[in-house]
Each structure stands twice: as C-alpha cells, then as structure tokens.
Length: 123
Image 1 (cartoon, rainbow, N blue to C red):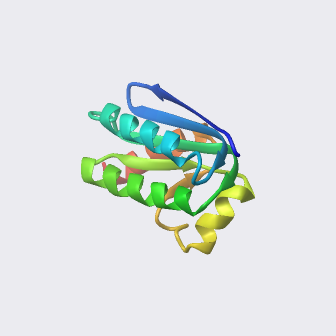
Image 2: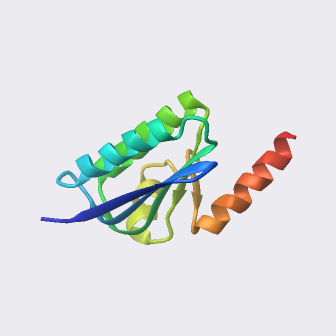
C-alpha cells in the first residue's frame, strides 16, 4: 500500500496544498479532501497552488483530481498552479494531453514570478 502526506497552508494571496508520496486510488481521498478545503479557503485569494514536487507516483486518479480542481478554480476565479518537476508527475500529464491546460512550474518562486507577469499583462 502506498502512502501520501498532504499539508496545506493559507497565505494572503494563495492557498498551497503540498503532497508527498504516491497519488493513487488508495491515497486520492486524502488529497481530494485537502483540495476541497483549499478551495473553500481560496475565497478572496487569487491562486491555489498544488505542490506535487515530492510526489513519487501519479496515477489516473491524480489526473482526474487535477481536472476537477482546475474546473472548480475556474468557476471561483482562482488560478490553479501545479508545481511539478519530476517525471512521475509530468509524464502522465503529458501523455494525457493536459500540459497546456494547467499552469505548471518547477518551484514556488516561479509561481510568484508568473503571477506577477500575468498581472502585468492584464493591467
């Protein structure tokens, strides 16, 4: 059985959900629960960051959660950012043809840089 640790942090302009371990059928419920809470906490914030940098396995259920979270964020006017740098996460997203759907970056500072650039373009 795989394990997954999920933590979340609320900041002034964002909510960050960090996952560490395997995202599969046996662990996805924990991630979904945290994402649901993060969506509620994202009210009045501009972005929800899903940090998957320490995920070692990312199954189809993980892709389904990403799509669901993205739809929920769009409905709330929140931008979903995905931090991913490992093949275990990037490859399934690529194979599913979802690379262009998400804001994917390799680190949290990059999320902040992209968000500033995005704001500049809309101003």
